[in-house]
Image 1: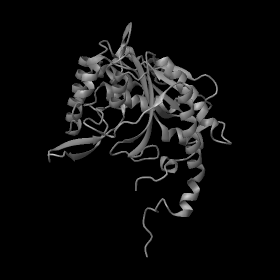
Image 2: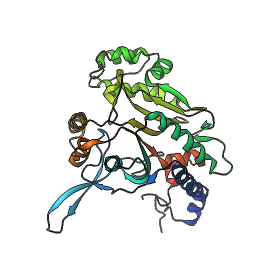
Image 3: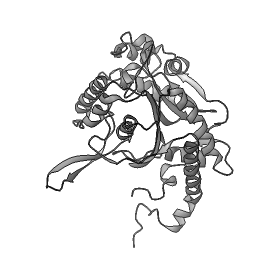
Image 4: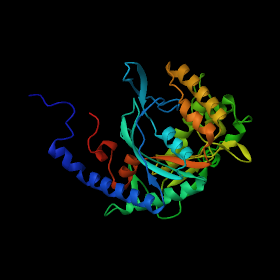
Amino acid sequence: MTEPKIIPWWRPDRFARRRPYLAARQAMTKAVRDYFAAEGFAEVETPVLQVSPGLEVHLKAFGTTIEDPDGAKRPLYLHTSPEFAMKKLLVAGEPRIFQLARTFRNGERAATHHPEFTMLEWYRAGEGIEALWRDCEGLLRVALGAVPGRSRLGFDGREADPLPPFERLSVAEAFERYAGIDLFATMPDPHAPDAALLARAASSIGIACQSNDDWEDIFFRIFLAKIEPKLGIGIPTILYGYPASMAALARLKPGDPRVAERFELYVAGLELANGFGELTDAAEQRRRFMRDMDKKQALYGVRYPIDEDFLAALEHGMPEASGIALGFDRLVMLASGAPMIDDVLWAPVA
C-alpha cells in the first residue's frame, strides 16, 4: 500500500516526538489560569458562532448557515477573535475577564499559522495599556517558568529572555532605527498619510513598491523587510504608537492624534500579541468598520456584516478599557522550543 503524503498525526512514532511540547502546553495553561486568578479575573466563554466574524481587512473567515426553529436560515461565521462578545461583557459590568478561545481564520497554514488555534484574550476595565504591558511581562515569565529546563523563549534560532524589563519602542522610533525613515514626515495628515512620500523613502533603502500600493502596503513592505526581524531579539519588545490610520479598534492617543493606543508584542522576531486602548465611540467604530469593509470588498470581492448588537453595546456605554489578544499556541512554541505550530496542538487540522 502506498504511504500517504501526509503522515497522520496520530501515528504513535510521530505523536511521541510531540509529547514534550504538549506537556509544556498543559503546564503553561495552568500557569496562565493561575496568573489571571491571582489578578482577580473571571474566565469567560463566548460563542464561536457570530453574526460578524471580525472585520480586519485581510482576515478571511469560515462561514456557515444556521437554521432557526421556524425554518428560516441565516448566515453565521466562526469568529476570528472573541473581541466583540467579550466587550459586550464589559458593558454588562464585568471588570476583568480573560478567555482561552478557539479561534478560526481561513487561508492560514504555515509554521506559525493554523486555521484553528487558541487565542488568549483579556480585558481590564478602567485601566490603560500600561497595565497590559505589565501583564505581558508577568505572563511570559510564568509561562516559561512552567517548562522545566527552559531559560529562554526562542524560535528559528533566535532567543529572548523575559526576565529583564521588556524593551518599549515606538513605531516611529523603530522606522528611524532600523530603516532610517522619518515615518511622521510621510503623514502630514495623520488620517490620510501620503503614499508617494513613503514610496520615495522605501526606494531610497532598496525596497521596490508597486504603482497601486497605498501607504499601508508600503508601510508593511518596509516593516517586514527591515524592522520585524529585529524585534524581540535578546529581550521581548513592546512596539507601541501605531499610526492613526492603522488604529483598528483602538482609540487615538490623547494629545497626539498622529498615533493610536495600539501596540504589539514581539518575541524572537515573532509577533505574539496585539493590544489596544479600546475605542468606545460607537459612531467612530461604525465609520472604521465601513471603511475597512469597503477596502475588503475592493481587494477580495467580499464583505462581512457589522455586528449591530456590538455597536448598540458601545452606544449603551462601554467603560474605558484596555484589551489584548495573544497567540497562545505561539507562546507554547516559544517556551517549549517547538519548531512549528502543529507540534503544540493536540490534534492538528488535517
